Image (spheres, rainbow, N blue to C red):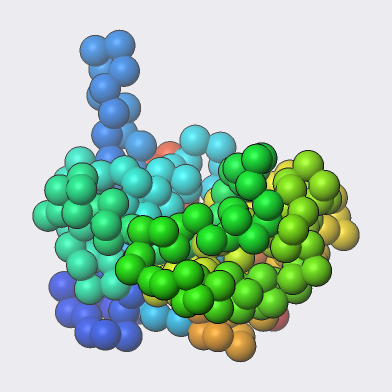
Length: 243
C-alpha cells in the first residue's frame, strides 16, 4: 500500500521537486484502453535519490518518461521543479526539458561519429553559451565522471562502463535540477555496474543531485535513499532504503 506519511500532493514548496496527484497514463491498443499508470500520488523531495522498481510492464519507465516531459499524462497533475507539465505545449516541454532534466539511458545513446567530448557538448548547443563556456561545462562534466582522459575517443573505442560515464556526463552538463536514469547498469557487467552506481552515489552526495532511477536489481536499489515500487500501474510500496 502507499506510504501514508508522504507529503500531501496539494501542499508543497520548494523542497519538493516532483509532485504527482492522481496521475494516470492510458494507451489505446486495438480498440482497447491499456491503463499503464493509475491514480499515482507521489511526492519526491529535492535532493533525493529514488529507485523505481517493479516487474516488467509495471509502468516504471512510463513514469520516468512522464517526469522527463517525454510523454504526457492522460489525467492528473504533474509538477516537476515547480512547473506543471500538463499545461505545457510540446515546444514548451522540449525547451523545459533542455534546461531542467538530464536523462541517462540503459544503452547510452551516444552518437557514434562524435567523440566523447562532442557527445557531452551536444546538449549545450540548445543554450546561449559561448564556445569557452561550453568548453568549461564539458571539461567539468568529464572530470566529474572521471573520464577526462578519454575525451577524444569515439564510442567504439570505449568500454561499456566508459560509454555510460560519457552518457552521465552528457546528462549533467546542463546542470539540470533532475537526473533521470533508466536501468543505467542494465547492460553492464558486475564490476562496471558497481562503478557506475558509485559514481551516481557520489553525484548525489557531493553535488546534492536529485536522482530518480529505474532498476530491476535489488543490489542497485540499495544505493538509493528511497524505494518506490510499482505493480500493474499502481504504487504499491514507498519506503526508505536501509543502508
